[in-house]
Image (cartoon, rainbow, N blue to C red; front, side, top):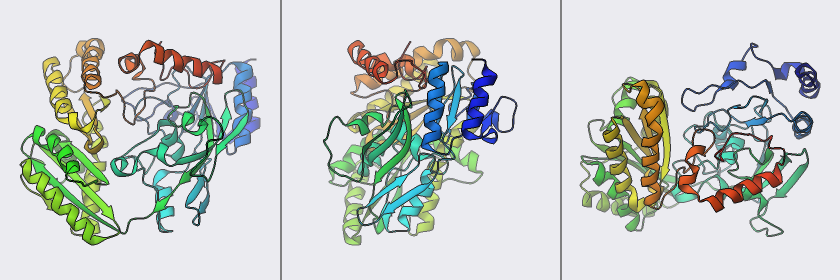
Length: 463
């Protein structure tokens, strides 16, 4: 069928105002996400409002053998929502309802386009808590979080997105509407299909409704910054804190180059920016006495690993100020130059070896790297900057340097992505983390659920 005909069918499904073609207003923003400086143009962008509209779009894509790329907030860092092979980019931004907050059972039902921060604030107003807290929470969506199994600072204590997803409504790759799970903490009727789709990067189906588990909102929290004069001491203090019997709700790492980048980006001084690294530590709970005891135990570990100082936030405003600095890290790095962000994750006891090794590798290749991330769960983001790097090194040799970083990561018992996903930019490295038999099993699963290969092609699996 000529393109004009199937575009006309899309307009009939969602309305002409929600069908965008190249050159029209707003189209350009759908050509990229937050991944580096990549840009790919889909043939058309559609913005459905209902599950039924999604189903009809998928049926059309099947009939025309068109690639279909689901998109949430466009905040991804692995190129998962890029239309690398053209086709239909299906934005779920209009499906953004908070359908229900069930306070008695502590569940919520939402559509995938709901902004994560809006959801967090809505449930907190009811005294409930949704812990997954990506740095892009003000613009990322729940559906995108589910597709990537997003993490965030609070994963250390509370887990990641998968730990809160209890039910999904999905449009399958052949246009069927299916539902799995629900407002249940236990459900073993069949395979765990809910968790199969969590983290599937839009390659197995399109999520149109999500049931999320909630927990009671903690009443108190304590937040502190601890600077170190050694990267190794900062990294080594992380498992030492845990060995004191404390499980912080967040334990974040930022090195000097990261702090200076944030300072330049914000245009104001950042505390401890001259130190080698800082740890941001937060504990929460419902009993102030227990939190004070935790703070004493944390101080003991910090002293053991030669923390140079300690700043304790005394008010909610000071706590928010600290978190504003941490959440600015990604934009601060991006403001310097184009970059490659490697989402390394290792057992936290191997964190000192990872941080040291990444810097040694980048120094050897003549690359500038800025590291920060979720030290408490061993997930460090290594940002390799384009500024000052020759075209030859950046375009031809950089994959070899990244391969070294990932080989180191895997040798330490880690993996090549903790929360950003594989998407488009990391799929060439997947064989470093998974063997041939494991990758073949992924291919068989993909083929069974999407035999035409139309769902988000060119992502996750290597060529």
